[in-house]
Image (cartoon, rainbow, N blue to C red):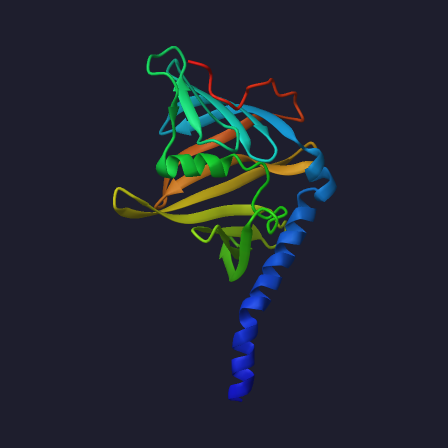
Length: 236
C-alpha cells in the first residue's frame, strides 16, 4: 500500500502538467486554432477606460510578439507609453515638459506582460511558461479550471479557464505594493472574434475585491499596417 501511495505521489506533478497541457491545447482550438492565431500579426483597438466614474479614451497598437503602443487621453492630457519588446518600456506626456522617461518596477513588468500579443496558453512552452493544473472551482454557477502559470521561476499567477468554452475568464496574482500584499484580479468578458481569433472586449481589474478600472474595446481592427518607429520613444 505504501509503495502504491508513493508511486502516485511521484506521478502527481506529471499528471497535473499533462492535464494543464490538455486544457491549454483545447483553449487554443477554442479561440480559433493555431493557423488563425498565427495569421493575426498586428491589431489596433480604440475604446474607453472607466476610472472611478471618470472616462479615459485610449488607442492601442500591438504587434507580434510583444510590441505595444498605448495612447490615453484624460481631461485633455495625452499620455503615450510603449515598448519594442526589447528595451525597458517608456512613456511621455505629449505637450508637457520632462521628455521621455522609462517605466520601472512593477509598472514596467505589468506593461511588458500586457504587451504579449498572445495569451499565456498559446505556444506556452516555447515562450517560457510552465503550467500546472491546480484544481477546479465554480464562479457564478460555471465550473472553472484553475491553472498555475509560472515564467522565469519568479513570475507566477493563476488563470481560470471556463470548463465549457475554454476561454480564459480570470487572472489572479498576488503583488506587494508599499510593503502590503494585495490580490489583483483581472476579469475577461464579452468575447468576440478579431481576424478569426476570439478575444475579450471588456476587461475589469480588481484589487482586493475593489474595482480599479474597466476597459471596453469599442473597435478592434486586425492586421493593420504599423508605421515605422511606432514602438520606440520619440526623439527628444
